[in-house]
Image (cartoon, rainbow, N blue to C red; front, side, top):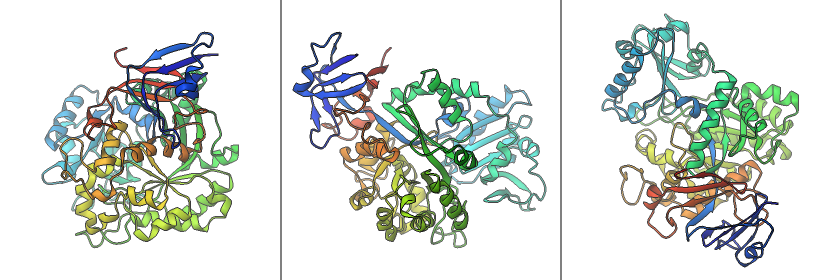
Length: 527
């Protein structure tokens, strides 16, 4: 029996009946008592007493939507976030000059909306600095990409090639591809890029966990495709998982999951099967999010449904009949409306699964009550609002009154689970908390002191709930994860300042001192 007594701390437990404590007793990885009852464990054989010197302790946070394999592998890619077009091309040129012609150069994070002309890049741009090796650069929103001529040639994207289903190629005046790839068109290039091996992915994930712990994350809901699930299982077999993982699979794996009888909730406290991740539409930045009314200034564009209603209906029926919950990407209001239509058509047992709508960035006001009735979890990423508000104003206009409507959803009774969508955004949950409580950009404070649509701001307690108990509820583990209460796993974070007693800006300055998972310190700053 391993006994640890944490004392002399200001502990936010997250428990409504006992929200604050000064001491916790932890036995074999779980909290067994708090405050005076905790001190009763001080004389237990081998008990370790640790004085936290008055520091603030909060429950360990869970990122409810990220792509950890993508993040881990992307650490080797070009980071193009926040670069001008000239800077992007310079960085690409430097890498290409050091890369053999048969090796791919990949990058991520570019955003044309930051450029003065907001003009999308083309293969011609890339060819000027990288004419020999194949290049694929993924946009920040991950729903668009640009490839150079060498990559297009390898993928067979030449001449009058037709658009793929649920995707399209950017085109020159003569109709030939210009290098831009939208939605499923990106897959045509990805298909010819050599895949990393499973050992390479395992090693990448092993190292990436340390970054999560340093940010105060003790759990993740991973939505990557391909071999990520196998890689997490390999780490679990080695007893090398340092954070709790809820894993979602993508559509290509559904038939295999059904054949094996894999049901949502299968697994243990470290690795658990969450369900099926689907895509119903595109993204705001690429103007492919599916809308009920056209984009502002673009009367012929209502975005793209990446699944037709009949397809989603069939998939949902097959998945839910087998006990598999769905997590469905929907950014535009037409996409979420379609999802609710499908959910309402399912039998009660199918609806009772913990279904989620991922992102839910624009919502028709009349659909809020339908979310409540369908018991859908709103899996949202606060930093999307504070980073994309200008695009939302430009493309959605007055409709932004119901965009990223966190407070409206919470007040209506819709469960919130917060995440980051990393590596599209940083997975630092403190940045996410700041976005949720201020609706302001963390770097320049835009759009101003009150924030963007300030009526949707949350309190710190509400935002933290979405990163802890809300994420736990989405995964069906709310009885063991998300609080620091007796019977719950001792997953916790020690911060260097009291974010509850300071202005919101303290969230941006705060640092994680230590992170504990299952009663063991997994990260300590300076070690």
